[in-house]
Length: 241
Image (tube, rainbow, N blue to C red; front, side):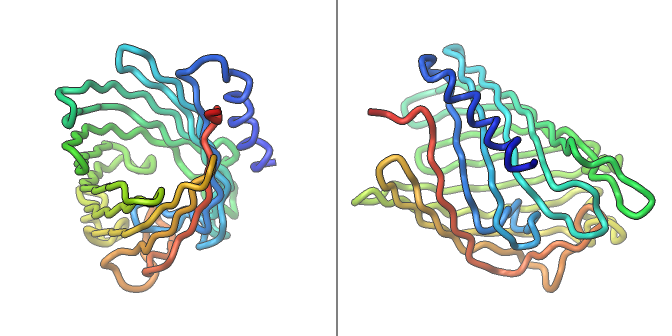
């Protein structure tokens, strides 16, 4: 059922190919990695997005993924909604700001399993050439009523023969992460990856991990954060002729 929902998101974009602003990306990934932490128990995940961009810089969209928080949690499906606004300052400098709502439609909780709580996060970012920096903030991380922040720096560069390289470092901090019973300490995550464009598809691989040791306690549950290889294949619709 979760896989059917994800393909339904992508199918909506296929029906709107005539509108150039509408696009959808479908991705099969070996691990749903979020800020260095596995949210699929290091198992493969199917993901899809549906995005619409307006000429004035406004963009809205939805993103879906299968997930696995372990036996203590109810829910195997994530559906996020987001909106952003951005402008170009020059040919090499741009900025954007937006909100993302993380939701878990099939998670209701029970006496035996915990509910995965929804929450909203905002961000502001700036891109200068190949570098991008972003600051994220929420005052209700994972529905726990605690503030959390995430600071990230990214670098991407196109290489010859349809290759590109991407490097990332992020820092999770704030009240939630400083509470020993919750995040258990501020966290640094990192990744270094290589992508290859093959026709309508993009193949990717990256090394991802954190500075923590052992399983990490996130959202009141253990999630793998060891250094690992994450591979992916994705395609974006509509396909250009």
